[in-house]
Image (cartoon, rainbow, N blue to C red; front, side):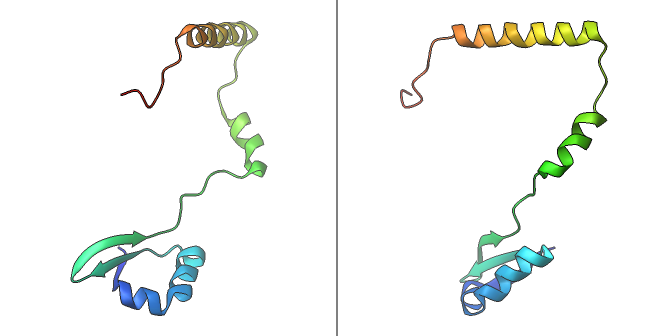
Length: 92
């Protein structure tokens, strides 16, 4: 459960609270005028490069036929995606 504190208190001891978030993984809910306005929390961590080998070897092992079919499926999906018209994201 995150600790609740005022925006003013956070501002006065900003470095201390950021260190608690970064090094202890603590979370804080900030209030202003008795109203919750923000949450300070650690960002979720991804995997490190050193963990890549373990992740790749922990998955299912495919036989050569399955590998060939998987490669074919990937190539078909790429071809289908490349054939779609480009969409302007600003055009809605």
